Length: 303
Length: 289
Image (tube, chains in turn cyan, orange):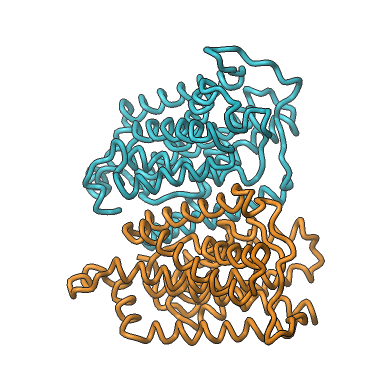
């Protein structure tokens, strides 16, 4: 463990910063997907994490088991992830919305969905780790004293591209405007003729596609296992909260802050403490600045 | 027979955990998702005292429960200042932190290797070795827990807890310091969870961090919700059914590589089903607001 870049003191600061940025870009995809969904349904959708896992497993099935082209399988997996998101919403959350259940009930139901699907994946693929990587591992490029691999460059490029597309969609398109309207005031949006169910479905499509994309990208970089989604969704939620819940620029900011803090935090200690650092940051934020970096102070009433 | 008795002992330990969580979740309405953290602290304190200091498990049990109660203050302090989802998330996080400490503080807890060879209880110089005697021991603890929790919820203190659950602002307006009461509930709940953790560690004689994961916390919460929020009899029924029922999967001849995820899938589906159809549980009186 000590010699492959995990242990204390042996890793260069530049490498940790780079790792933090890459982790941050994955967290950003998850956190934004989470925020897009949160803005319309207003609960913590833990099942978002299983869409991330499923994205990775879709990519694995299509690339390794069905020998599809890697680019084709990338897009197909994103579509499947989006469909999974809609299916989860229609099967489990729609009946709860009909009963206007409380946030906590939604949260626990989404946790139930998470546990169910995670174990379904484990039943199908087994609990062991799988890998998509074929061929030998190439040496990375050197950049200011740190090493970056081709796949990591791909992760950075694709995730920034997705962020820009999403930002344009929400700011410029009519559907994006409708989504913002529902997020600000669902009743008024309904009055002016926006169908909330349609907007919720759109947000699940976009959110789940982003989570799926994050899962697929990470599956090119590391091994995948059925339990990978849990830590991911928790990081996504933490990033959203410290950025300001529901704010999309906030989620990006929170994600990069979290990625960097986690990786710099393990400079002198073992990598096993990452989760601990992430939650310590969350709890400090909840106590001192619960509305996050970019949230408004009025949100505090709900916290 | 031995196997059935073993399941009963485990069920009894879960009854203590479920009752103590019901006090926090069902009676006071605080959605705490990190209950396994308290039993983790109780189990590790008790086991480490027995293994490293050679103390009797009885002292370990009591110290473990007290340390868990103190951790209840530490965990409860930030948690009770938050509401609803955020409280759930914060307790979740504190559960992760305790788990990480158990896993990563290798010099103290031996990390993922776990602590083997934890000594069992002895009464008046006789080592409790048979499973019957252990069942008797945990039954005594279950009886004590039921008695004390029953007294708590039926006392004026219990009425304040329910008033916090129903309408916190109204109870504040009557001059009750609700933050203090919520913190007290966390301490009491943590104390009993610490006892359960210590009983578990001295019974199984081996603990490792994987016994105290978040899934474990959710399982305990599922038992509370399934049996009934805010009802003692509900917790007993919920714990027994959810411990015994998955064991039936074994009798269907499933290998454990299938039975383990199957059991979790059933728990997941049950949680979804309860939330959609009956969020207060079989005989509960409260649903999450």
